[in-house]
Image (cartoon, rainbow, N blue to C red; front, top):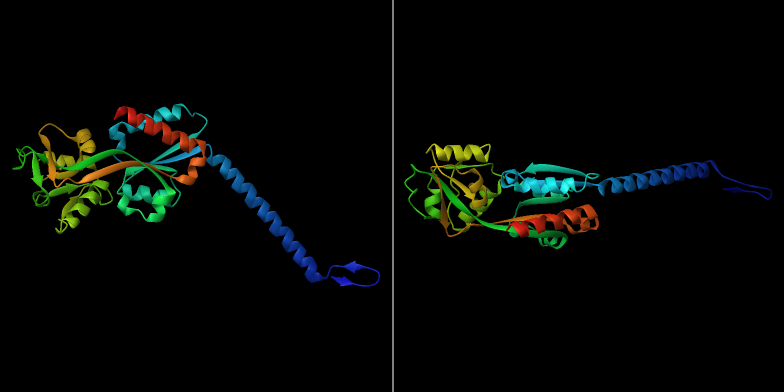
Length: 254
């Protein structure tokens, strides 16, 4: 400012600073308004990430029933493999994911900030056709399973990840396998007698056909399926209601 005995007036630099300040305040107000509007929209929107095989396991009906109870809210469902779903949760692309998970793959910080509810405990089985020499067996050793010509779904599938981890922990080399574009194609190869596959019992029961058999692998390869969200999102009623509704339905069915 320039001062005299008669007046006080702003210098050119001062006027420029005022204009910049006014612009910054307007921008801050706009950002706040946009943030509040997005928060309002988010409170009426639920982004779900669901394991790709779950529509075969009747879990889609639970989601459909919940949607019918919340007609004024938008519920978006994204289907993917386990690795991608966890990445979507980390990048805040999904509010809730329903996926297979190995808690050992999470960092201590993630375990602290995530709300994790396992609801299915399962195990992996060797799936063979009736022409396979192992068809008459009820159990097979892990070393026998990895000696098979294996047809497995995508490398990001949880069955593959649990299987490969078990193989490595047992001290074996990870076997070569044919990567199939879908679970259905893997089972088609098994049914044709071309080879075998590795799947959880829940998935196998949905896809298995006459002339195929589930054989327990020894030692047991455990899997776990969980509903996961970020604890901070439980402040949103829609997230909390879906979590509680889903887990209550699963508890009643199991």
